[in-house]
Image (tube, rainbow over all chains, first blue to last red; front, side, top):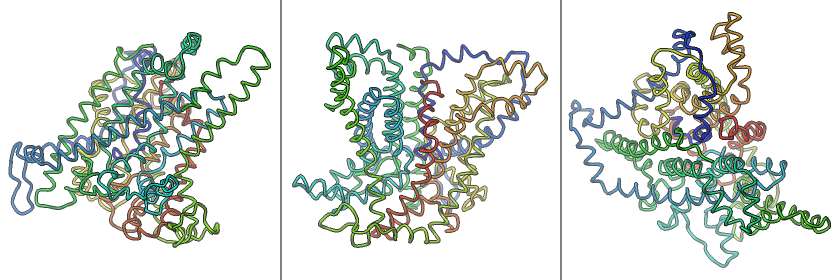
Length: 324
Length: 294
C-alpha cells in the first residue's frame, strides 16, 4: 500500500533526519498540565488510530498468526508452529533472493551516495540562483514513478536503444543488458540510483550548509584540496546524515519491488529476484501453501529490516547523535 | 570531478590583485556554468529521451542505424494515446483519487499530529508509539494480510481500497508533528485565555499557518497515490478503475513493442507530478528546512 510507494519515503527521509530534534523539543514548551484535554485529543487522534489499527496493526498481527498455520481452502487450518519458518530458511531460493537484494543495495546505495555528495558539494559552491536551479533539476527524477522509470530504462536498454548506441560510439556492444544474468542487476540499479538521487542530494546539501565555512577556509589556508577537505571535514561532520541515508537507503533498496517486477520479473534465472519480488511471486504463484509461505518470508525479512530501522531511528533521535 | 576540484579551490582563492581576481572569477563562473549544464543534462536526459521517443514513428523509434531526433516532430503518438479512452480514463480516475487521498490524508494526519504535539492526555506515550510504529513496518510484511482484510471488508475493486488503507500515514504525521512542535506557544496561550477551544485553536491558528508544510506533505501524499503500482494491480480488476501506473504496466506487457506510444503515455503520466514539483519548487527545497534538519 502506501508503504510500498517509494515516494512516500521522501518526506519520511526528510522528517527522519533531525539531529536538532531533542533540543527543539526541550525548547518548545509543552501544553501546561492543567490543560489536559482528553476528549479533544482522543477525537483528533481517533481517525488515525482506527485506520492504522485496521490497515497496519491488525494485518501485522494477522500475518504473524497465519505464519503458524497451514492454510488450506478444503480442510481447516492446521497449526504447524514454526514449520514454515523452517521451510523458508531451507529454501535456496529465499537465500538467493536475499543475496540479490544485498547485492542490489550494495550497488545502489554507495554509488548513489557518492554521486549525491559530489553534486551537493558542487551546489554548495554555486550562486543562489544557480543553486536553486540545480536543486530543482536534481529533484525532478525523484517524482517519476518506478513504473515510468522501468519502462523508460527498458526502452533505453533495447538492442537498438540509446545505451547501446553510446557503446557503439566506443566500438563496443551491443549488450543485451536485461537478458544477461551478469548485467541485469546492475542495469536495474541504474534507474534506482537515478530515482533516489534527488532526495539524497537535498538532504546532504542541507547537512553541508550546516558546516561552518570557517572550517573549509582554514583547511584551504593549510593547502587542503577538495578530496582532503571532503575526507577530513565533510564526511566526519556529516556522519549522522550519512549513516541515516545509508541505512534507510539500504533497507529501501533491499525491499525494491517495482523495478525488477516491471523490467525483468526476476529473470534471467532469478538474477534480479529481490526478496520482495520473491515474496510477491510466490504469493501470486497460487501453489497450495503459497500464502503461508510468502507471509512467513515477508515476516522474516520484516524482523531483520524493522530492527535495523528502529535502531537507526533511536540513534538519530537520541542526544548522542547531536554533534558539531 | 576535476571541475568540482577546480571550482572549489578557485572560489575562495579569488582575492589577490583585482585584475587577476576578475579573470579568475570569470573562469570560475564559466566552469561552474559548465558543471551545472553537464549535471542537468545527465540527470534530465532519460526524461528528455522519453519525451523525444514519444515523437517517433513505429519503425523509427528503435531504428538502426541509430537516430537521435525524429524525422518529423509529429505529435501523433501523444494524440493517439490521449484519444485512447482507457488511458485518459486512467489519468482522470487516478487524478481524482489522488486529490481525495491527499485531502483526507492531510486532514487525518494533521489532526493526529496536532494532538500529539500540543495536547496532553492520558496514555499519550502509548498512542505516540502506536502511531509511529507503522513507520517501521515494511509494506511487504502486511501486503498479503492487508489484501485479505480489504477483501473481507468488501472493498476490493472500489475506489475506497485505493484511498482508505494508505490514508493514515505515520511518516506524514511525524513530519507534521515536527512542524507543530516548533510553533510558538504564546499565540496558543493567548487564545486559550480568550476562551478559544483547542479545536478552534487548531482550525483558526494552526491550519492557516501550515500552508508551507501542507504543501510538502500534500505533494508527498499525492505522489504516493499517483505512483502506486503494486497495490492497484492486486486490488483493482475492473477497467473502469484502472490506475495510470497499472495502465502503463499492462501496456508494456500487452503491447510492449509499441515503444513510441508507450513513451508518449509515460511522458504524459509523469507530467502531473513534475509540474507539481516545478510549481511548488520553493516549498519542496525548503521542506528539508521545515523539518528541522536545516
